[in-house]
Image (tube, rainbow, N blue to C red; front, top):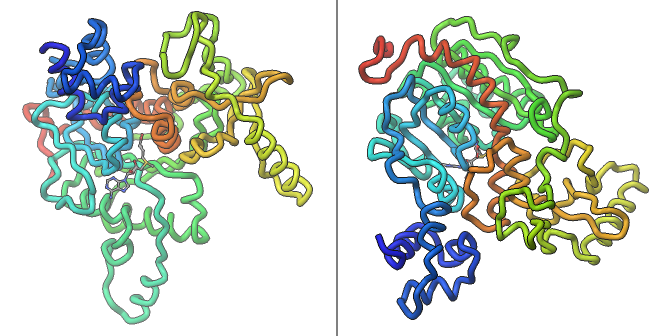
Length: 414
Ligand SMILES: C[S@@+](CC[C@H](N)C(=O)[O-])C[C@H]1O[C@@H](n2cnc3c(N)ncnc32)[C@H](O)[C@@H]1O
């Protein structure tokens, strides 16, 4: 494909602005190349292949040890963890157009993989057979008040009655139909205490008693692996009784855990150059990430006001020696939860999207093809990859022991 054709191809997947961002030019230049008003320089061809397009010949239809599906996939943090264990993703659902872009730029699927949008519109019978179901379902609170009313009326109820109208219902109906060997669900720690514990009780009750799975739950802090305090509830279920034991997880001591120095740009020219985050020969973090005087003054005043009222809210100013607070999906707004100190003479700065990726345990090879705002949201919504990878490592032997991969071992139970 010549360079013009590559640009046309990239524009079928990304907006001119996104292509421009990835190539380090402005959107007008991309449009001019697209309309053939001007010719792109030779480097553009390689840059498009490397930064924007799926790698040819790496379609993920190779033989695998087990199959899985990736629901509420976001940018595929869970997928990375299960691919490391030899799994192949056969179905993905994610409805957000920008998350889909990041996902498509990083995972290379062949014709046997389905990339669905809104899961509520997918019939469970249309989901392919799989060994493991993965879902970081959004914590969409739901009340179970209706259930007790139904109880009082003596009406029968099942998971459909208890959870219909929530996204957990979509996870449950797929498990009910496909009966995967195992599942892993991830959510915020607050799910456990939401509605005085009733929401979590309903979820585990449905998984155990309505669906008949052996369910184990654990709150894990990402701080074991990355310099970020991030507690998440992990719910693991097996269709059959297996010897899965949380004690087999290897969680490095907090004392030995990496500090922010491990994820911050080195700014000495040794970091891989990324034009949109770094500038100059030494790869200094772009000035755009330093807070304006106005925003910095606002955050300081806000923190003082709340301190006076006895509230703990405020910004989180950290140095390379510290551990960050939880990166949230709203980081793009003011970055206040994680501000990197730049000494007393300079305002603090936000993390760059690449630093956010590292803070969530994504390798530097992970492509970031969307704007900063979108990528902050995507990393803030994602998982700490090494946490899921460690759970996947302990789950893997039980998943591989009985697989639904065609040509592998026994078939799944009816
Ligand atoms: C908490 S995030 C999960 C992120 C994911 N674990 C990752 O590593 O990036 C939840 C995701 O579910 C997606 N989502 C919400 N409702 C959906 C629906 N009805 N169908 C498909 N995706 C949905 C959101 O766009 C969001 O990306």
